[in-house]
Each structure stands twice: as structure tokens, then as C-alpha cells.
Length: 309
Ligand SMILES: Cc1ncc(C[n+]2csc(CCOP(=O)(O)OP(=O)(O)O)c2C)c(N)n1
Image (cartoon, rainbow, N blue to C red; front, side, top):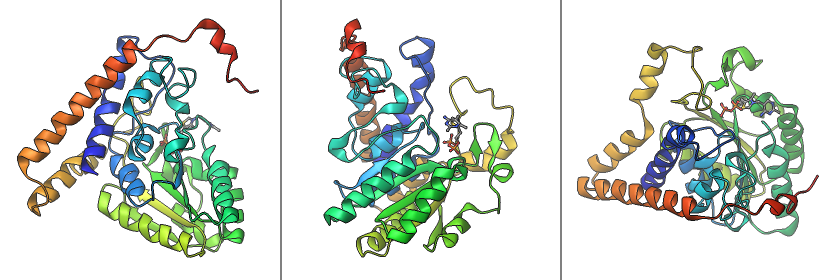
């Protein structure tokens, strides 16, 4: 889990430099500060469970076991990317690991995750679907439609809200009617749980409980993970909507050093092992960059392939 958190951070930390060097184009969104949510949640899932992701989805894919080489190639628009270079950052999917897709449409994952959960229920496959979404997305009508159906049909669905306090420059308290979004679960007749999204083990425990409920046929759970986006909404965001004072206590609770320290203190990990893990990650990221840059550009005529409208 620590390794995956470090890998997510290393991957997303590259984005500004890749933009400056014009190695990636289009939009991409880093989830730096939110790694514990992605990793804690996916650690509680089975390998064949489904996830759906968002516009801020690199971490979700990595946490579910995605290949950083193919992700990097996708960001760079290359042939070996997950979508053969046509999707970019916001359309990465890997069905082989149950990752049903990032999504540039805020709230676009709700219906897909509910569909996957319904399919699992009808097939009796014992799979669960988990939908990652932001605190902005919980105000989309698609959330309410899906929450209702999932409640009535007792779908094996986990609705995981990454409450990073912002939707672009909009503050949660100015967007979410009725206060704490966790209360919305009650309206649809299933449990809503608040969890510390900076604590990877707390997230894992909350999602594991929701997973058990889903498998027992007891239906969906809404998990709201309180976290904080450490960087701008996107690479060029000037962030005039928040202050350093507001950010400071969240930065102090950075989930990666916190988890590393607790593993060291409790004797699960030695300092040298932790350092070696970080070096391993740096090597994997350097290899991903090399893989992506060595990957050919798609042929121009391929623009017409795999296109569905
Ligand atoms: C349907 C739709 N409306 C608006 C946008 C523009 N948009 C992109 S990201 C974003 C904010 C989403 O906030 P949240 O769901 O909290 O996710 P976060 O960016 O905080 O991870 C908005 C409004 C969009 N992509 N799709």
C-alpha cells in the first residue's frame, strides 16, 4: 500500500514538467494529497471487483494495479497507451483489472458503476463495484438517480466520495445543500460513513465493511473520505481561492509520510526498506517515461478507428 501511494505521488508529480516540455497535451489533474483514498479503497477490493474513476483518476488506476508504462504512453498520446493515445489522461481504462474508466464528465461514473453492480448481481458473480467521485459530483442528478436504484435494488455498490473540499475553485460548503454529504445516504435507505481520507488504513477498513455488506446482499454504502487536494485543480491553476494558512494543517497530515512513519514505528518496515521502495518507484517512473517516449505515434488514419459516436 505504501509503495502504491508513493508511485501515485511520483506519477502525478511529473505532470507540470511534462506540460512544460510539451510532452503531454490536453488536460490532466493530479491527486497529490489524496493517495490514501485511492489505495485504501482498492486494498479492500478483490482483484476482479470493478471501479469507475474520474477526471482525477491516475491514482485510482494505479491503486487497482494499472500499468504505469501504458498510462504514461496514453498521457503522451502514443500507440502503446491504454487507448492507443486517443484518450489522454481522462479516459484511461483497463478492463483486465476491473478499471472501467476514468471520465471527463463529472458524475459520469455513477451509471457505469451501477450497471456493473447490477450485472454482477444478475450473474451472481460475487463482484462489487466501487465508484470514485468528488464532492462536486455528489450534486449531479446522476448521483441521485443511481443512489435511488442502488438502494431499491440493493446493488453491490460502494459510492466513494473523495471530499477534497473543492470543485475547481468552488468550496464544498457553498455547493452542497444540507451540509454534510454523508447524510444523503440516509434519504435512500442505506448507510453513510465518514472516514479520515488522510489515513489509508481507516479508508481500507471503511471500504472493507461496505464490501462485506455488498457481498451479503445488503446493498450499497456511501463512504465520504475527508481529504485535501494539495495542488491546483489543474496544472495552470493560480489557486487564488485558498490561503497558505488554510492548507498548512492538511499538508502537515500528508498521508504518505504519516503512513511511512507509522509502519516504521510499529516495526512493519525498516528505514532501509522504505528508502529502497522509494528508489524502486523512481526507477519504475523513469522506465515509464522511457517506454512512453519510445512508443510510436499513432498513424494519422487511426484517428478514424475505435471511434463511436
Ligand atoms: C458534467 C460536467 N460539468 C462540469 C465539468 C467541469 N469540471 C471539471 S472538474 C470539475 C470539478 C469537479 O469537482 P469534484 O467532483 O469535487 O472533483 P475534484 O475536481 O475535486 O476532484 C468541474 C466542474 C465537467 N467536466 N463535467
